[in-house]
Amino acid sequence: MGTIEKFDSYVMGTYGRYPLVMEKGENCRCVDENGNYYVDFGSGIGTNSLGYCDSDWVEAVCNQAKTLQHTSNYYYTKVQADFAAKLCSATGYAKVFFGNSGAEANECAIKLARKYSFDKYGENRNKIITLQNSFHGRTMCTLSATGQDVFHNYFFPFMQGFDYAQANNIDDLEAKLDGSVCAVMIEFVQGEGGVNVLDEDFVRDLFELCKSKDILVIADEVQTGIGRTGKLLAAQNYNVRADITTLAKGLAGGLPIGACLVKDKCAEVLTKGMHGSTFGGNPVCCAGGNAVLNKVCDANFLDEVVRKGRYIRARLEALDEVVSVSGMGLMIGVTLKTKNAADVAKLCLENGLLVLTAKEKLRFLPPLTISQHEIEAGMEILEKLLSN
Ligand SMILES: *Cc1c(COP(=O)(O)O)cnc(C)c1O
View 1 (spheres, rainbow, N blue to C red):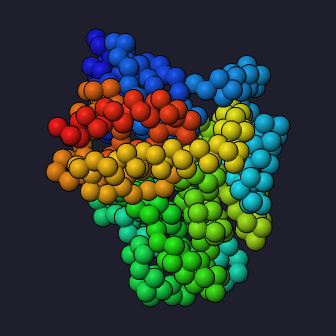
View 2: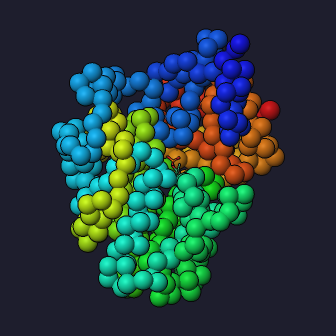
View 3: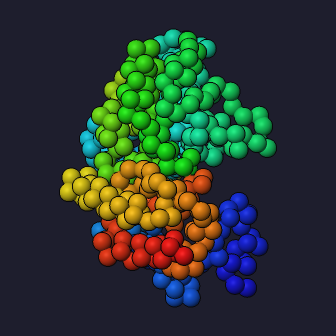
């Protein structure tokens, strides 16, 4: 039995997979089981922030796996302590909770926001406003938080206590911020929703409104965080700091980890026994995270992300088939004039380039370490396909 046949016989068919069996990779290039090479503009889904098999990352991860692969959270590990300290000091947050995924990081943020409000204001102030077209995860709670009707099917009953405001419409948001609201959760750039960037004015007004009502702002930076937009956090592009920030995708360079970071005023809200995760803060993942932060926290590294993003954007904007380019840094959405994004993504794969889609757009989340040479190789394939 071939791999694809075996896979489909035994793994649930929850994904529309491309017929590609990936075998290995190096930085922005990967190789399938037949020896075909691809330039990868997706990096997992923005998870392989340092590309495939960065040598420092591999060394850190392997050393940790050989030393102590896991222990329960009833004990301490130096590697989790080091990672937490590094992450908090780099992002300016007071404390962190580690889970294993973006959805879990958001679950933690939601529980924490409700408990914060319960402690100060009692019951019935527990609603969380998210934005239309948002994406916050696949658990029951984060599906409920997700502001897209297509995700609110089949699995009834969904959780109560969520409502959805229009992005970039401060009047709509303000009208929804009544006495029942404890938090507003946003993505600065909606990823799955179509690489939609929030307006600066909207973000500034949202933060001011929430502050005046002691409503917590939760920034879901699962996709935008860890250098993706050219800053360590996308919030820095807006000069704001959310009360709570969640991270996951690129945080450990391709290993599963999620982080919920909080300011001082939220640092003692969750206490002993209130939240947990068996694998959360796993030593191997933390070792990978340390290797990521060692590179991504550097100002020159982040400047390069900005430069490479600008370069790709300019190349795209010069194409007839491209209507517009959205995004920030190396998080890029492309609206096409006549072609269908899913069809183009399939064609790209057949021609040696891996890209993602988001709604009607092509979406690129290349490794932050992508080289100029790899950019050229990928853009040449794309330009050829888009000019046919
Ligand atoms: C991917 C994503 C999630 C969910 O992350 P998982 O690790 O798949 O649970 C949540 N929020 C945003 C913004 C995401 O892009």
